[in-house]
Length: 630
Image 1: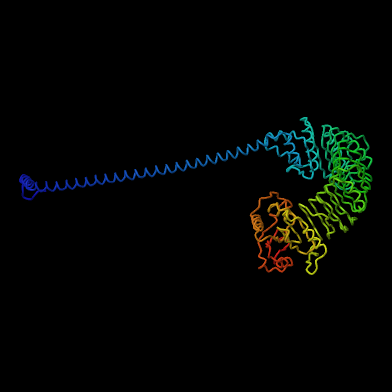
Image 2 (image 1 turned 135 degrees about the vertical axis):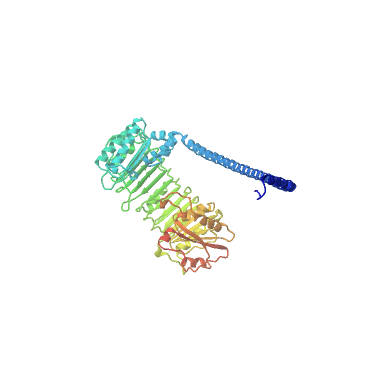
């Protein structure tokens, strides 16, 4: 900027003079600024270095953390990998074991697999086993046991235009055709029919003919129909030289023909029409027959069985009109006869001293007839008399007899038993007419005395009946050193006595007693006591030091935890654990129940033993609203 009134030359000189005068101050000022700038630069460098160092540290730390995380992840992966490998190895081992077990089953001989398949009654069910393995499929196609049961056959879903009967016939035709195309023999052919007419009869004749032509060994024809419409059994079967077993139901054997069954061992006729001439013709032509059973057959009045060396067992049940049976068989071991109500049948045994098991249900048999029969069998080991209503006073004496059953002989007034080697005894009746002449060395016994209906369930408090005193005497004669347990059932209550020497029997009608060896385990004992009889109370009489009540309590508690002991869905096959809804221990001193049963239990002296009581509420009692305690 120029000054006014001064020339430019003069101004330049003045400016030069000012710069010269001001130069030292400017220089100092500039130095300070430069120093400040340098300091700032140094500080920035230092801060940058520090930031760089911290950044490096943080980067290093981050890298370390990442490395640690990576190592941890790697370790986890390794661990998981090992676990997976281990699990895979386990699965592999399990699979190998399953495959190995499957291979072991598949390596069974054909004969054993055939036997397993033969136990499956329905052929369709047996066919499903072909999915198990190629081996089972091959064996199934060669199965020589063919069983067709119309009761279990169901038409496949989606099939239209054909009835269930038509589908069943087609299934049999296809199975037989497939079998014969492979040139496979037929060991067993069994047929169960629920519908029968002329058309079915024609088909049956063809099926039976094919089976007979292919060297069949066992044949079973069962027609499950009512009325008089019976199947006319074809003649061709009576000429089979390979047949070993023949089972017929609702068949007619009227045609007289030549019978040649040289290998037949078993003959079962049920609901068949046959007279003595035809049955005689069949039996006499079967020299190897071992087992003969006639059940509810008609047309027979006289059954004569000639001398057959192989005959081991004969059963005759409810054959209408039969008046006489004559058997001559030196090796006969078992004879079982059940007679009709209104007919009397005379039993004649010739040379049958080898008989070991005799079961008689004959409402017309007298004391003398029984005596003559019994003393003709010196080797008899088992005797079962059921519903022999004409028996009044009998004597049973034998050193060989091991099992004796007296059941439902209502008019029996006295039975003198002289059997020192008897091991098992069973009795069912209203009184106790029997008496043992020898010390009782039984291993087991079952007694059912008096009716068990609710109307007759009452206590004999004032006076004990005679049968009750006899029962006490019988139990007192047992060999207590054998260590028995006694199970008593009455109405809806069960008592288990651990020691028979201290008995407190409830004086009531309808008692069912079972004497069991002490070697029987707790679980088996409960199964036998509760399986078919679902009580509301279970009481245990035992010594004070016994652990038995505790074991029973544990078993009852275990039974409530969703038992897996039986897998069948059918209610009849389920065990008592599934039937019981809950079970709990009851304090007899505190219970307020006024029932006669609980009152009797509370009145029993407990000086020498303890009484442990359990309340068992099962599904049946719960369904009808019945409870053991109020």
